[in-house]
Image 1 (cartoon, rainbow, N blue to C red):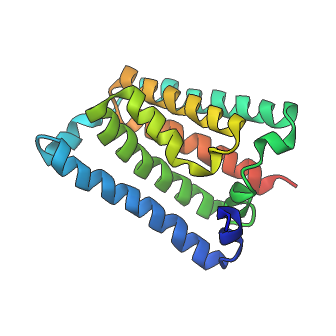
Image 2: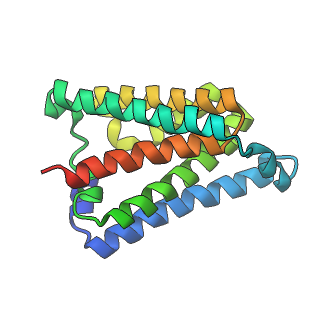
Length: 188
């Protein structure tokens, strides 16, 4: 059975539970792996810096640029090239904006802790970027979507490499997902 068909069978409450559960597993994986791959659990504290300029330039402005490119692609490219099986619509379309905010913030934190914080920090930029794209399994059979998530993953990874600050890719990831989630939610 396809992932989209499974999701359609879930109630709104069950969908929310599954979405947060999957993110919780990613966060748990990040912390468990850090015990084995970091010299100390306190290495986490070296991954964060409060740098407003990087947060705004590479976090927020990069996110806005990515969203504008995504919006242009939505209008230029055929809809069937962009179809993820309706999963994003199922996740965002009938949800309150407060849920979209909390969920996309959770996704950004959990995924970036694992993929940039642990995997990229330990195994490098290329491995983490490819793994991030592959984990988004629903895009594997859609070449355009897979290429888009792969390029985005490399860009987020580059931002982390460039800034050496995990806050920045979290901000970028959050704003991309939140703004695109709002587009789906508000689209008629």
